[in-house]
Amino acid sequence: MAWKAPIVVHRPTAGGGRRVTVRGQIVGLAHNDADLVEFLRRAGLDEADIDLDDPHLVEWRGGRAHQWEAA
Image 1 (cartoon, rainbow, N blue to C red):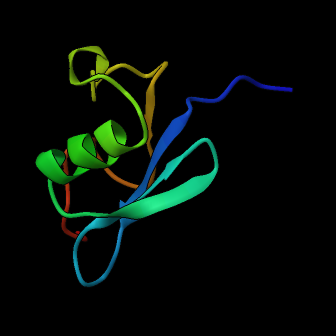
Image 2: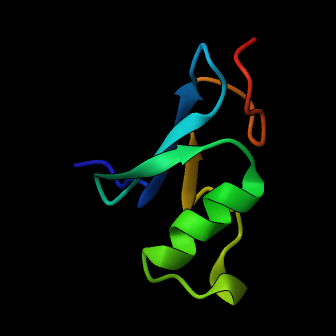
């Protein structure tokens, strides 16, 4: 079985924002990096340990990292 990042930021929705899952559980729809950090904090990650550009922690799907609107 392939290793996967525990946090997935899914492709941007037509209305803007991206669904976020943590270990397979949907935690919300983020509209910016601050929303994403807040979801991760609520999921139990310490803010000092959150690196949104670490591919071992966060997988960005269907768009560039930090892109929140649909292309």
